Length: 292
Image 1: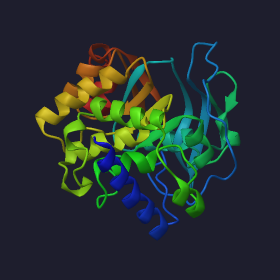
Image 2: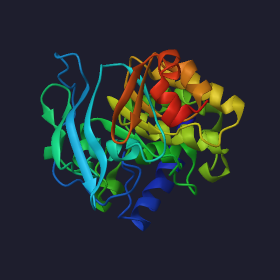
Image 3: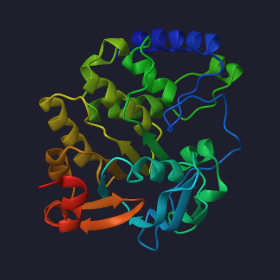
Image 4: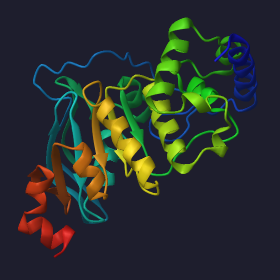
């Protein structure tokens, strides 16, 4: 991207921020006016060998046990796939991790020392946990570049937005992410004109510019073409190791391409865990999810 294009993009984005002062893209997939209180992001302590740890977590809604004694842990840099029937607790689990839902009891830790149950959604996002919902939530009237610029870790207030100018490191980060998500050639394209798969990649890019350590991805290839699904698999394998990923998905072919370890949830607890071949051969998983 040329300096002139970057400048014009920044000017348009500053105007957009002035006209929409309450909008700031968050990792929870929505938009919030401001952070509740400052949270300093940094490398999470993973000396215990886990980036995420849930122990004996329970959640009930009007007597229904959505999560029932859930135990789960993910290692730093791991790409873990989560599968299970509808109502298994997959979405509720991610709601708990991101602070949207509070469990009735149990422990949820980010790394070895950060008790996530003490923090709210914006604070957890600021710590380095990014969440992507199934439906992409990009700013369709803005360009690809402007979407990524808007998602950067910056103060979202009106006054700060009017003074905002991209630094060299931020420009480099955006350029790196554009290459990673296969959208470098579409940098000036309006987001609303992208294909469904490209919008999904753009939203993942909006998380990546914030340098998250853990990504929660809900059915990321739903509605994609075969080619887009294959490129998304390549993308996730590229991210593996640099980030920890939890991928909730139903596409077994996609899961088989990207995952070394699969966790099967059923009735709010872990039913089985292992390689895809192992869980596919488990009679319990066949009975409640895969069918015969």
